[in-house]
Length: 271
Image (cartoon, rainbow, N blue to C red; front, side):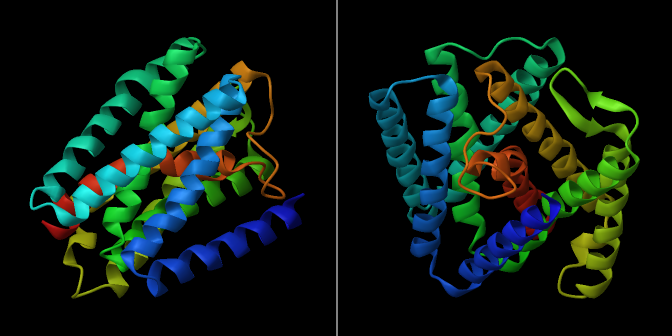
């Protein structure tokens, strides 16, 4: 299982980095949009919708995401639009998703699942498209979640004893969370040293706060998708990715952390 998981992750990582640096922004938007549409289809199945409902939801995600992405790249106020949408998404994760987890409240219901699914998928897609204009910065911010997730998985699997949220995701442990924090801070230290003098912001307390925020939101996103799957009575969102499950199982942490990544890009790393 671990070998299959590592192979799949390596292939996905190679493909993502290749596309990030080699294709123009419109092609990147199409590729990432395709990923989000697969995620939308999986979300519809988790919601228990019929095929017609899944198609309608996918169309809403595609059209709204495309319009927001086009406006972000072409309109003079595009940067402000990205900030507004990503701020709304951050509010969703902290003021809606997190309380749902803490209270273990149901997310079921067609309207609730539709609205929630939009906030999970579309702002993350918008952030991905907009940040691709600075590919090295985007890669650096994406790597926060990858480092955090890998450290939490490896340490939690080997040494985890204290469950983080046993009623939601029994595999998550506090030892894994601690490992994620240590690994992310170590990654930031190395990144700060090797990126000088081009990116002086990586050696600031604000950068440390942003990286820890991305780590925390990644954990929230992971737990939230697990809670939605538990409500649907399934282990994985799909079977597309060997060793990982579905697309949502692979991008759950990113959907929560990417809006903050876009906000941090403006307020901390670019200005």
